[in-house]
Image (tube, rainbow, N blue to C red):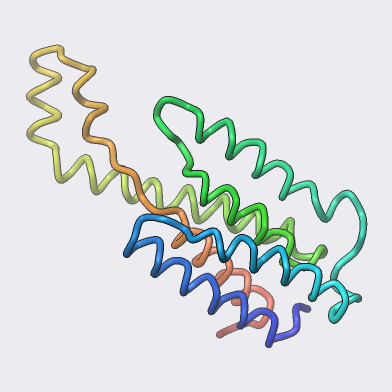
Length: 168
């Protein structure tokens, strides 16, 4: 089990980062640096939860690599700050809970993205139908929307807490 103070600290940190991401549409690099520093602190204080094995670092490496590729994609699928945050946040997730947190992250991403797509379709339904009638399919893509990813991370971490502690 993750120690409650550690879990709550990370939940509070994600709450602050989510607020800043909503407000300024940017994740400050100070939190990326803070997470890296905290990792070295946590591995010395919570030794029984963090292991020096490749498996502990694999998700961080994957998020950095995928984030770089997704950031360079013409559609900017993922912002650079989101991938850096995920990479450093996974350093802070105790080794035994990384798989469960990733699973939660995937499910919440699917749910939130599906909700946003449906909401976007309903809000723009008349325009979308008009473009379909005119066979102007390329304009339909213009109705897409970008959402901050930090709320998804926050909700995933909250879900992990519910699974671990039963209720928050």
